[in-house]
Length: 131
Image (cartoon, rainbow, N blue to C red; front, side, top):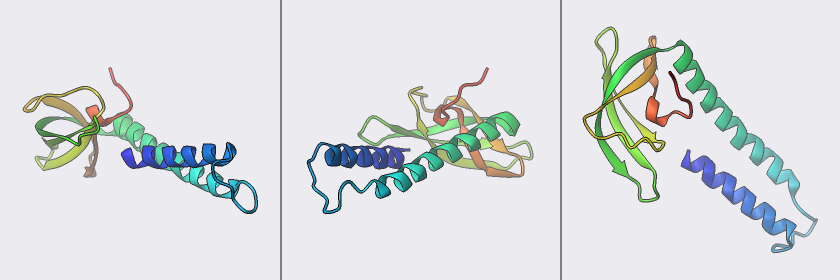
């Protein structure tokens, strides 16, 4: 997520800089660079959101236990957790806390693919909310 934001902000900065005349390219504004870069950033974001929607809508649900939190220093916190699937397999994972500030040792919903439990999303790292 942070990489996507960093790329988007870099493209925005360079685009504004070129538009306002801060950098003078030899053959005019190279819009040919910004179109593919924007498409790649948008496609990555859309694919991640579609995966989350698929797991929330069609996946199995389990309760994960938060093992720990790591502060990256820029406001985002990473949450380490583990959960047990219906067949008894224990799966560990990490996800970004999107502002829910889930405390350690608490339970949090996780949505996973029953055929591939490593394909999962924890509720605090999802852009979507469920009822």
